[in-house]
Length: 325
Image (cartoon, rainbow, N blue to C red; front, side):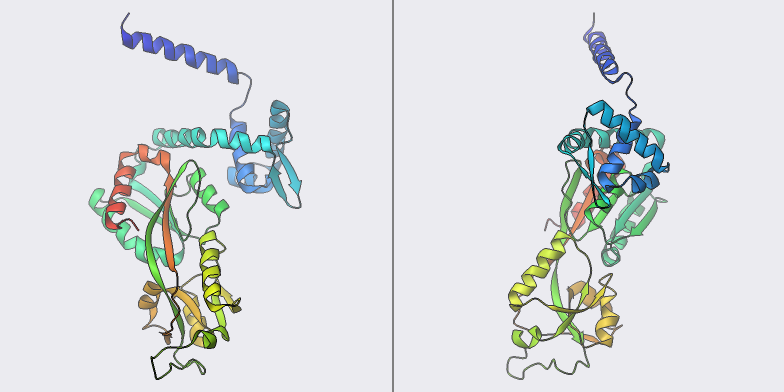
């Protein structure tokens, strides 16, 4: 018997054993389990899967009976996973993601002509021109779709698990066994105010504003409760020696400019954003002795997506354009 035939028989026997293991178990229940695990809600899981909350609740009941465990415990409005549920998720996350990726390849063999990315509005300004040039060179006619979001960990998990985005660009890394999360580039941060700000006057000697003067001012903050943004905030406030007084909170970096222009607040933003909008809004950089931290930008995608040659080549081209930070 040839080695090839021996291998086929061994594989057949192995799969037969697996079939006996899952006999009587509905594998669709695992999809519902993952949806509830990610969102901590039966209602949200039902919305994502396009089924009724009752169907999800029934699925959870069957899973609880199968594993002899409650799997999720309610705390307020959130379902918290038990240690058993966490163990199930950790063990199946990578193979489940791999299964979805292969299924997508079978169902949509021409998926390399459709690329979906998700990014905060500010990052899209710099990343979209790069992606357009790359995709036009690789596959003319490739359809590129961009969705905008100030992403939380849960949102990124949903986008990539359910293939709502091929790549997510974000201010923070996303640590998951099934994802690649790499630092794409870093930017300097600058402090800005309105040109007509009544109190910020650069000192004649040295041409800088003291940290004490800055500490007394109110700030406009771009809201994004990611770990990276929290760390940057902590570093800035350590430099100032105080907790900043936040007067206005806006949803994006680009929304900071009109607020700063119209108020007496200060803001910390990426330098590239300032260069982009400095001639549109009546704002200026404040020269100070403060040494501000850098802003980091990450590219996040499913490891299993690299099975697709088009996608693997796309990632390689992006990495070539952005030197390792």
